[in-house]
Amino acid sequence: FSAARLGEMIVRLELRDLLEKRRMRRSIESLSGHYIICGFGRMGLALARQLSELGLPFVVVDRSETSTEECQRCEWPFITGDATDDRILVSAGIERAN
Image: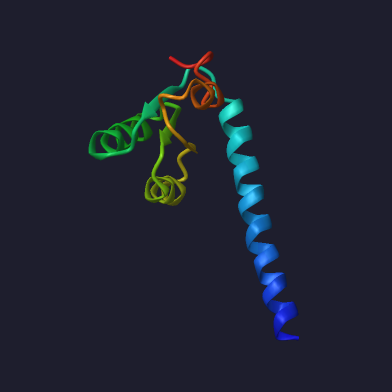
């Protein structure tokens, strides 16, 4: 019984993570005229806060898992990856971005 409950909990967590990633991807795909913040260090965080306060759309791109946790907490769209990778920038909507 315990093993079944543990397995159920793991599946729920993975399903929740998968659904969250899908929601985030759709949210980013719907953006147009947005900004892309490459790197979420001290300056990236300051930029995200400023853009958020101004109500301007943006996407954060960073390699760090701790950065994505901060973005999730603030409900900011983000992509985990290297901003020097063209595929990552395309997934951030660089063709439609300011």
